[in-house]
Length: 499
Image (cartoon, rainbow, N blue to C red):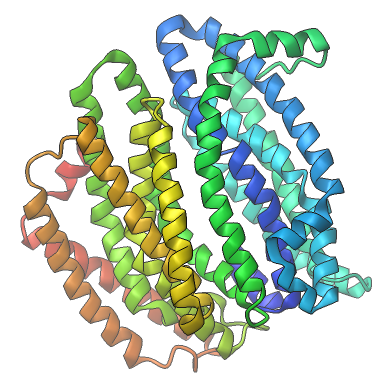
């Protein structure tokens, strides 16, 4: 809904490119401080500390880590606001093709940069709640950002326009409001557990926080994790820089496609990874290698079971998905076609993108962050070489395809690494399971190709409900075809899920 409203209100232009670049800058740093390097180091240490030393000692660790994180974030936000012009130039110097878009990107970067502080503290809170197996609040929290941005696009943009203010600036207000709300909703959940962090504001509190062994361990683990996350962010930065020099709207087309790709990635990979990470860390702490391997095996089977048909849909049914979700208002026929090609590029690597979210925690839970980092560095080089080969022919879609291929290489390397280390031993039955999923997905692909060609999805722009109804019917039929074929082939889905 959020992306639909943004697409219909603003389309794909230099100003939407400006917003997307400005939003990516705090998100880049957020992935360093929040769900990236910090979470990868914090959650395993927290889970191990809780298992070995009990809740009272763990509460002290939470307080001291929160103190350190708060002061680092404060300093980062001050520097980020001051250095906004430099950051925008480094991320997307091509925006200077339209000075108005470049200036808007700088303004919105300054407005939204403090968003990283809210989201990093949200990541700390979510890590605590997930370790205590309270998954509901962290899982529901991102909805608040969506609600805020929906309100900004639906109500804020027209009001800004009536006041003579650039309407896209309303989205920046929505982002900041979403950050405040996401942090605010964590507080009651932490209070109920007696785990609300107490942040120290004195120099002595800061010294005590740094002297805490757990804090030092987290900082030590964050160094290679920062490298690993930085590799992914460097790749994003390079891709955004390249896209900003292509046709105006390229950054936005990639962003709209990325949202559709991130839907299955979040629903499958992130969700499973969030649940598995603390339990894998606990199994490692208990020395239960069999349980550790079995949980990884279960996670990978769920990924293959659900990510493969999603990838098939993104490759064969992209245009109907893009048209039905985005093709309204300012979003043109050309925007549909350009977003469709980018989405197909992402779809080629969807299985890898989802699998990484399950395979990487297999290393993080063992507090081994160096191996994923080394793999990520190699994949970064491969991805950029692919960009050199693909972008001249496929333009922005080449960037998406390079990311997809890189993700497949990354996931395969992580899998081989876990098997070689002896951390993961595939359980029996993978060959039969793979054949069952392949046969169901092949039949699904035939059906979706027929459905994509049989309807003029772009031509139904003004028949909103007819197009939405047709899409709903196709998706319901797709689910029925896929799961019925699996059932007929002998796959016991309920037993797999219960495992």
